Image (cartoon, rainbow, N blue to C red):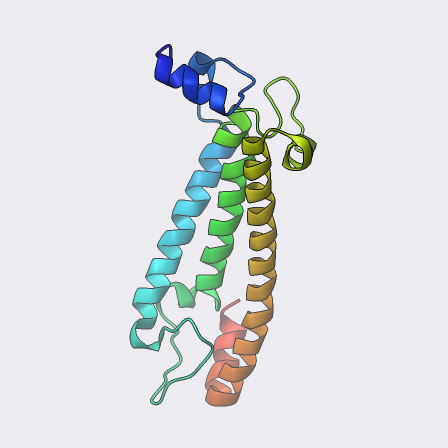
Length: 179
């Protein structure tokens, strides 16, 4: 933290705290919870991909000889992959914005003395060039995560309708059993 390189990097970000304080920042409970959410979300997603096997696609489609997958994470929740994605997006936003995050600790958003996210918007519009870039990246990411989550909610209802049409009574029984 006291090296010239660390001090130069801290100055580039125009941090509100000295390098020794920023680089020795403890991991906060919120930041740790966000990290755990991202980890669990990715584990759920990879488990879903493995469970679906050849039935997995990024596009909305049913394949020939398609079967209704009801095991693995899909035995717990019908849209398990989407649930995992929401954990990843929400956790990522918390990791970017919470105390303990690089943006918070460098003073790009809020500060240790004044916990305010409005500083992000102000810096995005009027701050230093680096603060403007970081501010707009954070704003973009929050907007993207909000859009993505809304899209997944919309897409899940379309998938439900497709699966109901394809599998009929089997789907209805599964839908009643699994939330």
